[in-house]
Amino acid sequence: MFLSRVIIFVTIFIFICSSNGMGQESKVELQNDVNIELLGRCLLYSFSYQRLINPTFGLELGMSVLGGSNSSILFFTGGCRIYLLKNNATPCISGGIVVVTAPSNSGPFSDNQNSTSYGYIGPGFEYRSPGGFILRGTVYFLIRDGFFVWPGAQVGVAF
View 1 (tube, rainbow, N blue to C red):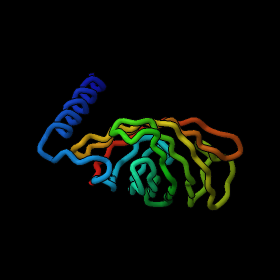
View 2: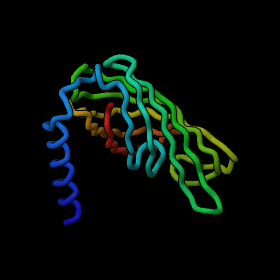
View 3: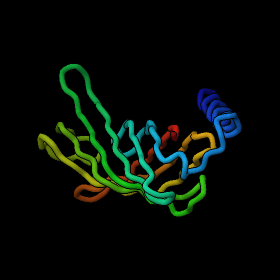
View 4: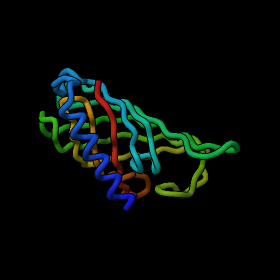
């Protein structure tokens, strides 16, 4: 029941964003985007910013904070995304590095270092509406002493 409501809401939101009066800009005019990713390269969620250098290549920075008042784990990400087509709906490949500031034994982490880092690479698909709404899905390979497969879904807006 809940999942069907979420699917209906997202479908209506995509339809409204792609057909309203926000303009008919393309990827060339809307070179910046901000988004939230659920699951993904920072395990639970992350906020990120991407700048398109050209219609097929973008640079990305992101961050996430996990934890409570006594201790927190910070994730800082940096990487790039390569789009295989110049269309608004296109397959893409992302890759980069994640720096983690506190020890953890979950996901791809298996030691108790004070800070660590791991790489990621992920094939995915992006839909970018002419109005600026962005929807991405990616399957990440988190790489550190082997690899850990983890999905990610991003929702954002381009400007």
